[in-house]
Length: 136
Length: 408
Image (cartoon, rainbow over all chains, first blue to last red; front, side, top):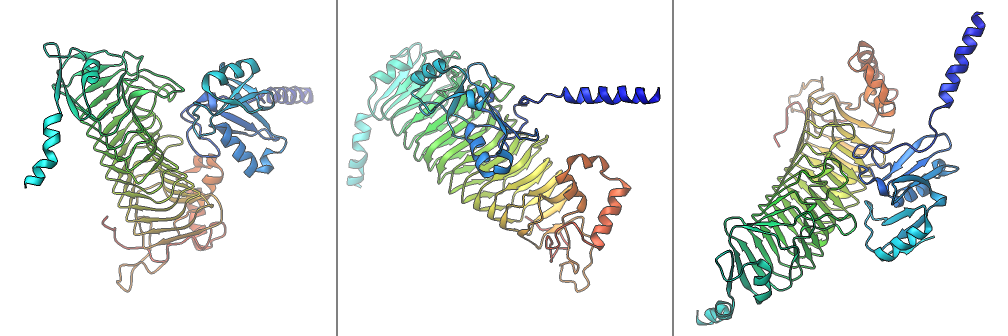
């Protein structure tokens, strides 16, 4: 009887633990620091996130900061998941699925000057109005 | 003497004074600007002027009498300077438009040289003053406040300078913007006696700006008092960094900077007075560190910094570091935690002082240990570590600790 009780407890604890959210974490604007340049993250729409193989999240305030971090910390970047923010909606988006536009009158915190879009047509339209160019 | 009169002669003859007001020749500033020639002065009587964007394309003096109000109605960039030698004085400039991409503000200088903005009140704007490719411009005695945003999104900087040279920013009061003063690629500039308070991000922010000096400013209750990033040769003298409290808040944040001097500053009541990350060849002389959580947090990637003649008083931790590398020079500082003696009466303690406590090292690597703060267990640890150092870097030491406080 005792054994079953502890088994149920163990299983439920495991179940709760496995329910932990594995995706990207929300940004606490004005609180979180960019892990590359140490600046406070202030603009959600340019922020990015890297989640290592082990599940630790690193936050950045600019797409460029994440790229710099990835190249200088290859141990953390291998097999990591990278997320960017879809510019119009402000929602997380996997980096591989995003279309990027760069340059023109876009100004991002660390001078990466890149916006990410989920929708390629929207990216092209935005690029035309901002004088930016598609990078991918 | 006769020649000298000739020098001023053309000015006296050809410059006019145009008046704007209800009972004057011109009813709007725009008309007066359109009718003016280079070098004219426009006097604006008090009143409220809602004229959208006023673009100035030749040298002018725009002077407010009785503080007239320029209202941007939350839609427009109020004044655009597109010429050299423009003077703006005595206005109250409120409610600028807002644009995330174009960064419009109350006053924007486009490639303007030798311009002056003084004695104005800026209220409730997105960006206060935006200088783009300025040269030898003066911004002084302005009050720049904004209450339109509570988060860091949706608000610009008080004074924002970008790709400029020799900008003088003196005696301004800035409150409630994102950064009080933001300098990006600004060189040879001078920031003197400003008061930057309650800004949502930094009081003063350097980004890739070399050869600048800031003197006698006060940074009160910002997210970080000053952030100096990716810059070289910045002089920081006689500033007050006070009340920058919070989770990730600093008095002074240094990131990838070198060849700079930090002298005669007062750091009081900050969570971390100075945070150094990738800082090299910096001289910290004669600074006061008082009542802070951490006096200095110095990452192990910092090299060849000299910390001499500073006072460390009543800080929870005087110094902490992240790794075991110590290539910085601590010398002749006053530490109130020093318990040594001075037998030869040369005012220098005879026993070296190890400023890095084991506990601070442990907290750095594992913040949750903070729970054990001021417990008997921690005292025991620190005492043991002092007698037989095992984990703290042995060469992290002040060989000549002072017995008396340094006057800064």
